[in-house]
Length: 306
Ligand code: CP
Ligand code: NVA
Image (tube, rainbow, N blue to C red):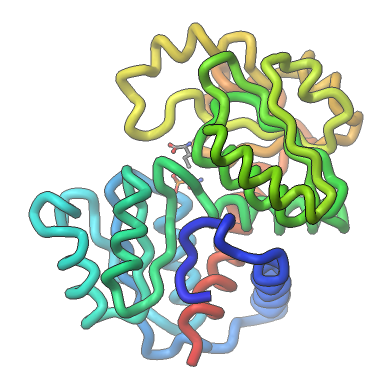
């Protein structure tokens, strides 16, 4: 593994190696402190968009592994405007030992990886959010004791978070149903790739437009905001299109009685999820947020250790 850009690029063995490493680093931290695996190393963090979880969890991951992180805010470097993506990659590579980047266009993170001489980690692009999916499956593993055979219903927009769940589900044998309004389905190329992986793993990848049908018997119900960062202008129009796709108690009643509720956060209570569901005992949203830290420590340790 040279970079961490998209889970579709990893084998199931590589994903499991990351998950086991995350589990071990979490246990080590909970028992005291992590070994300073990244002492003297630095991570450059490029953000074209806002962030709470990604920024803080990457920074704390570096601190807990004995290294440093340098935060570069959206206005700081003007990726592709003040300076070309290629030059940013080549310059940063002279200062830091790895680069994490949250970008608008997925192409930008691919270009960073093309020109950087250090590992590049995708901290969210318009296409995928692989760090999120890794932390999410760590959360599923902890709560369920297993991963293969779990059934996730993702309800809402066929967006970056849905795409990463499709990729990781297909690789690890998790059934993924994506429930969207018409016109908001994941891209057919993403579905095809996930289905190809699913043929090996035994997962079922299903798209539907019917919330109750999609959620029926699910072990996990997952949702995300209806308008992602960069889609603010469409927010009002989307509210109308997605109104029937809210995850509320009535929809959760179609899932398994002990189904987990998941959300990558930030959440808009009253829109894609009711407060009742988001703050219910079935909700594991803050475990997901915590597990970003442990999952990313695994990514950093594997990519950056000597
Ligand atoms: N889930 C997630 O990536 O959160 P942030 O946008 O706050 O980083
Ligand atoms: N789909 C959301 C995820 C935020 C973590 C977005 O891209 O804004």
